[in-house]
Length: 345
Image (cartoon, rainbow, N blue to C red; front, top):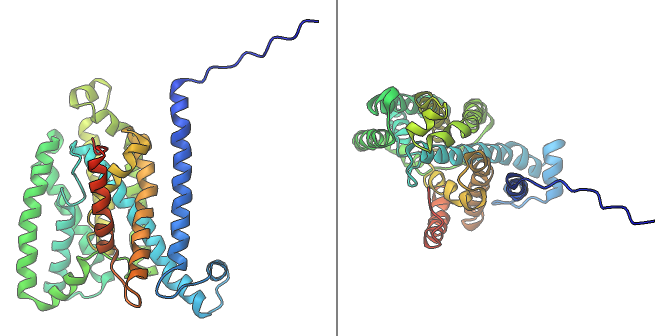
């Protein structure tokens, strides 16, 4: 009896073969983020055993280690996850929107608008607590984003006009902030700590106020992956493909405002993360934003939390703010990426 013919095999489409390693990388990024989050709960000025971390999360009974994990480090870790994802996505969306590989959350004036609102609330209204001026920061970021959109041409905005409008407003608002804090010592004290960028102020009240805004911004940014891919081909090509370029730019600005405004309001301006994250993940994800944005949403918070843990360990019994550590760690990493010529649009 002749042997049976082998069953026919279905050829794997080329697109599917590309998705498999990207999907595997996405799973690896999720596992890395989980490990860094666990380190954020366990490590710090006082080390907590992982067994106490687990019981402190699920069955807190008032012991010192449980209080540290449940009341202090859990809100800080959750805020780091949300803020890191927000800044990573904001930088990726901003670089796609402006077609500028050096764009970061400061380019469109969002950080400067938040800083101007905070210093105004502290100096003219006497607000001193984070929960008091948090919404002013978000309002300032939203107002400046709207002004940048109008100055950039509104429905006919172009990447160059948006970047120029943001740069001009950033310069003007930075001068305003400097003038106010030179004349008001109380505002100077607030801005001195707020502008460093830190997760140390995290608590359940702050997390409860900014989390809905950050989650809304994250969802909107992820939904914009397809339209921004079309916009990257140029306005004419995007219109030919059926994309609404004006609506896409307006929605992207709203997403950037929600992400950067809430993140800056809660932690101060954490610089460099929004610039670094897209370049860090692009060699893994490729230029397709449908992959790049999820990668950025996982690896940017991993980097922020790792920097926060490093700052807590390196300066015991005090700590270095995460904004400082991100810049110290991120700058050599960015230079290495540049030298390997992996920085691209």
